[in-house]
Length: 482
Ligand code: ZN
Ligand code: CU
Image (cartoon, rainbow, N blue to C red; front, side, top):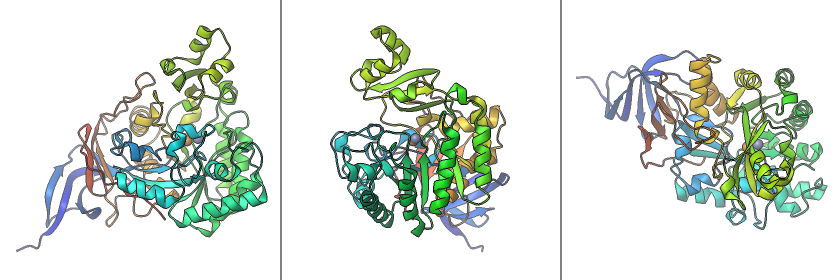
């Protein structure tokens, strides 16, 4: 009599896209506990549960490499906005702002309000945050970057509009080092924002250099300028990474403003050349509108601006800034100032740039979703299915295998997330099962909070967290550290 192997779950007859970029093949996959225990033909295997996945694609769960989910995983641990897209892991703490380590909670400059209210910044150390994460038991895995602006806020208090002194840099370095020892995966910066404008390149090099003792750590940057000065900003980023000797990810790469349309040819050429001698990658979201705090300095480069939220005037969410200015008989700057604290959606990118950046081999997909906004940018709910529907199925810009690689294997490799991002025997069972013919985003600028279609099942560490358009109540995400 044949010997039978037992496991918890078998997914049979799926078209497996394994995340490495190699061609899809039909295979069966066995999952036991939180791991993939066998892949191929499963003769001799028995399972508690069996899913027939004929006609469906099975891929590694998507890794959202650019998020601001620091608090969202604690406040809304089912994480419907992400698991409904097939996302199983998120990287939080981007753009220079992380919820931890922050030991100060008075009023906070933009973009801190995008993460949460001042009193919600209550995690002075990474272990405090990790404990809250584990108590909340979210449905997704999370890895945390330490924000440069968060470090600045701790040591420079109200005087963020100047370069840090040597003593302040060494205090920030100590906090960063402790955070890396305690499980953070790297450093992020947001040099385009008020708390970090004044930071000199030398300040960044000193801090990024701290990562050098952590060979798996990464530096991600929302660069100093994403519009008229984007080329200089790319050069600064490359130089910073090189001088510090640390790999870099350029966040949500874009060339904002009509006068900069087409400049991704230049920036990608620079990046490609730099890659011959330095580890450099980038991420992008599949939309030609951006979203962040509503600040007068971001206004001039947008073709249209939609209000995403306003604390003093919540009724204006979803109206354009122009409409508000017309009602108030004032100019756009004044309207923006009166609406603040506020967030906006800026229509300011070129589709050809977006396509070029997305197709670039070392570009990963990251949503940059902003879960605290009343009327968020649709990227929060739509990013990953939109790539698969619009840029794979409809436009054929990427093959399915290439697109999945940019959402999984490439992301795990770039961020050093061990044993994730690929369908491999022994790896964690983070998976998404979807219909390649029907998958699509439904979130729009008018109705942004809508789950995608065509996602059949989402599995995190071996547990089904999303099935047939609803969360299952299972919350099996873990805190990812190096
Ligand atoms: Zn950013
Ligand atoms: Cu961001």
